[in-house]
Every structure is written in structure tokens, then in C-alpha cells.
Length: 196
Picture (cartoon, rainbow, N blue to C red):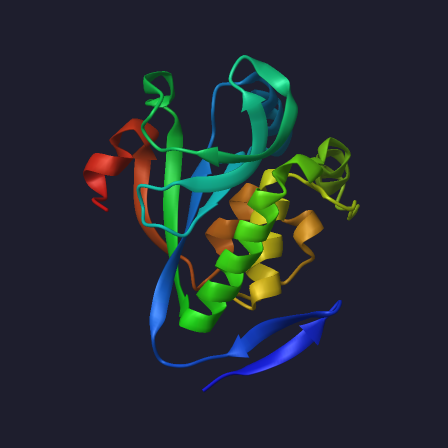
């Protein structure tokens, strides 16, 4: 059984049936100057978060650069694991979360709606800065990577975050009890180590 609650005019699942599906959170730390800057400032092991609904091999969705060679423009993008050989040595950690089917369906619906209108969404660069100083700065249609994943998880009722999504850093996902680590190592070995 399950029930619904309303938030900002939309319905979200809170309690659900016994059937479950799996959500994946992929944490990485690339060699880009922006990732190095975040790592230098926070000393976090991981500086980027992506969310996936279709197995450990992806695809994963996040807010990141749209073109490999340029930091901007950035926005809602699809990230394929193992497609770019240059990214093979990137440290990563993959987590999985089992959720009831209605929660999973709610999350997928949100993601599909956002991706269908992805040109409306932009990278929340100012939000990254204020997050570092522990000051939430929600901006309409603006997200940074972990804020985006946390928002989807919170709105679907998948987890209790313990803080507003605007203050969630990638490394914070490592502290959520219900997330189970599946793989830790180099991104290039993920598909081989964790078959779909």
C-alpha cells in the first residue's frame, strides 16, 4: 500500500508497496580545473554526483558541462559510463538505493520531465559557492550536480536527507545509511566490475 502527500501543487509518494527497484548514485572526481578547485577547498574525496535509474552501467544524469573542452555552458546532461577513455582513471564510487516501485516511478517521471525541457535548466554556479559557506541559495531552474540528485530524491520521497538539497555536496551521499556501496575504484573499470 502507499499514500501520497502534496508539495507545491504536486503529488509525491511517501509509503509504498513491497516491490522495489534500484536507484544509483555515482560519485566521481575528475581532473578538470573546477573539480580540482572544489577538491582543494573541501578536501572531499568526490566532487561530482550523478543519478541513474537504468542499472549500474548507466546512463546517469547530472548538471555538468555540455561540451568536454569548455566549462560553460553547463546544464542538465546525460553521462555515459566508460564512453570516454580519457576518463578511465577518474576515482569513483557507486551507490545503490532500493526504493518501492511508486517512488521509483515518481522519480523517473520527474527526471523525464526535466530532461524533456533541459534547455530551461542551467548550472547553479552561485549555489556551489554559497553551499561551501553553508548558505542555501535556491534558484528557479538552476542546479548544481548534487543539488539536482538530492532534489529528485527528496521530492520523490526516496530518502530523508537531513538538510536542504541546496546544501548537499557529493560527499554527503556517502553518509546516507540506506545507500549501499557497490563499487569503489577507477571509473574505467566500473562496467567490468559491476555488470549490468
